[in-house]
Image (cartoon, rainbow, N blue to C red; front, side, top):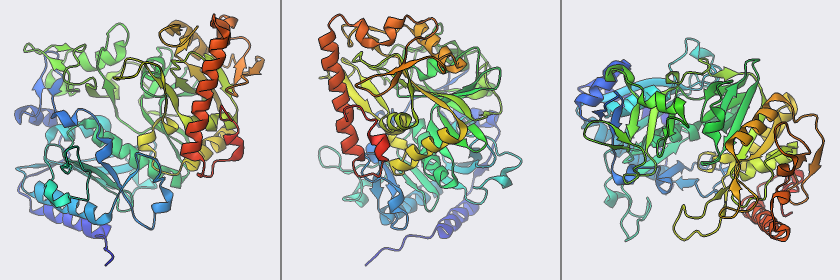
Length: 555
């Protein structure tokens, strides 16, 4: 017999009923109160500088992608790429079981916290998000990361289509109820954790994951699904604005330099991670940042360091330091990764010194795709045509370095569609097509910037000097690369400038920097074949424009 999912209206009615009868429901408390409650309830400790320090169970020191689900409804199933490894379907019946268990668990809590915030700095598509949780620290996290409700929220296309998030970070599901429904762990046990989102019923549940990123990225995924239907392109990128109002976007996976290069003292930061591109221009989704802390240095990342570790009364500080090593005197050792290499800090954007408070800008003049090519074969900069930009957007390439994982002795090609594969649920032609259309309509220049190796692969060559990369980025942002002559790279099909201000011309062609030209040719062809193989595996039957497919290296 077919299962009839609980209607969204009934779900919301049951949530409201539970809240109306619960003994203690605290709604939209002030930031100072949330901080104090987090301390009083021993959800966090006060560090020496006033930031809040917290630690989570070992299974929560990062996202749990294999426990992250999207509810599959037949009515909307064809809008999601179920072949993408991160789009794990969950049947509505199992989701409704989790929903029932969540309501029961919330009912049993001593107190509940509700925050009403929005995601999206542009009021025309700000998404109202109501978070219900038993943890003051989770409520504070949403205060840091999500935005206040704007006075003109009624103008939002989502004004009457808000999203509800139920979060039980430290509870665990009764695994015996979910045998055959949730992930089977090594050894045969069933997982007791679920991070699940139902786009159709606009409801998300975080059950058993205390990682702050589970809340942040669930809502990011929701936005990435909902916005294209409204003609808005969601992007996993940082964004900044020059003194003349020119907007730039920087996209890149971990280790490519996105955070470092976007923190430019000459340019005001809109945000470091999540943005939307609409007919109005660019708008940050968030109110804060969720920065990695491992090996953070004050001299290299002064803005992030000060945002987290400036001294202030803890009741007004409110930065949340998650899973970093802290000594008994309240100071941190950011080089100690024994707890996790993924220590994080959540803090409001206003803790940074050079931001644009509105977090909105016009249409981007320049878009940079950052890659750290450890093969040493990609040019340090190349201008991308419309089709090339769509292709490299689809591929989201960088390298995984030798030594970063057991058994890796040579750089491994890493592809993450749209530089955000786990969070981009729709069919890939949707996002790629929108980028091409927006380039046509608004005239953005797109550049590929290799922050990786030159003169040979990792272990032989050397990494591009950051000062040289900054000069290249400045040349791209200033328009200095628009009118110079370019030459097509015969293997990677990108247009390499023949000259770039403050950059030696021989460096622009990576083959020139290799002593062994034959070795360069061999490795370049190998990387091109990696591109072709991944494209065929991921996109062969996804309706990608043939002219875009033809821009793929190795084709």
